[in-house]
Length: 182
Image (tube, rainbow, N blue to C red; front, side):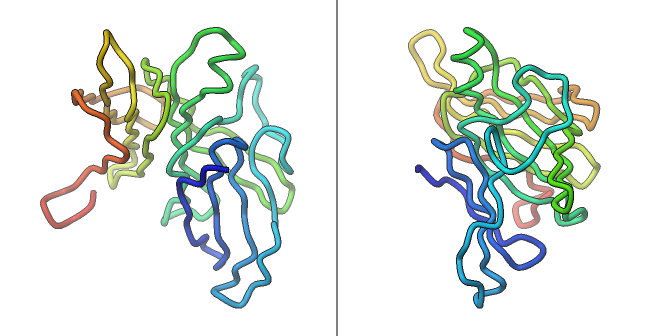
């Protein structure tokens, strides 16, 4: 199942990222008193419909799913895109921000940024204080090497900053200074 992220959700349950199922699974934790049943599966063939005309709207082989602290209905996810890229024959990884309507089981993409590179694995997603987003494409094979790219993306999906590292980076985060996350 290759779990790669777990987060306590704003309502006290757990959101578990199962990379090889292409699902984010919400588990009844209830602050430690839950019974562990699956509340929902988010992703292709899961329990939600997605409001999108994109032929491949769902994330696949995702990493670092997390709800924004300022909006408990806004989910960030780094979409490695392995399943989508294989099915389409080409493509890049994406930075996604999704509005989750749990009651009606509808997902609406807010940001679906093509990052211009394909990361086979790893990655991260972070909301920045200025309203932009930070995404890490951490395992990009290029010309016999494996590199990583970090991007800052606007809410409109435009890349406004990029950094290249010549190594694999599992997660990257933007910091205001050495002691303060952005």
